[in-house]
Length: 80
Image 1 (tube, rainbow, N blue to C red):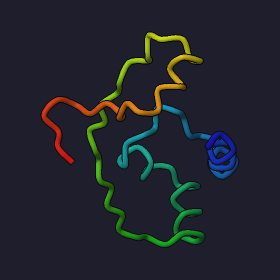
Image 2: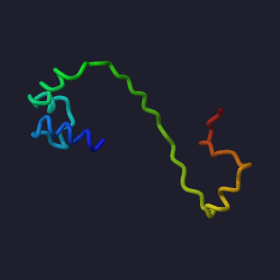
Image 3: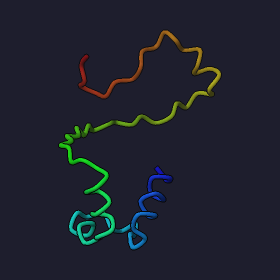
């Protein structure tokens, strides 16, 4: 992703990391010109899932890795 950011900066050196809004990016004439000649618009739908993160096991790694018979933890109330 870092190399993509550097490549975009080569197209329009006036870009700033804080330029994240469409209104801000539309004002960048070099960037919009490049996108119009080199890219196609496409609808993209992104599904956001709420991911629950579990804490790391408190057992030492060598003991924890031997517990093959114990199922993976599931959030309370979730049924497969």
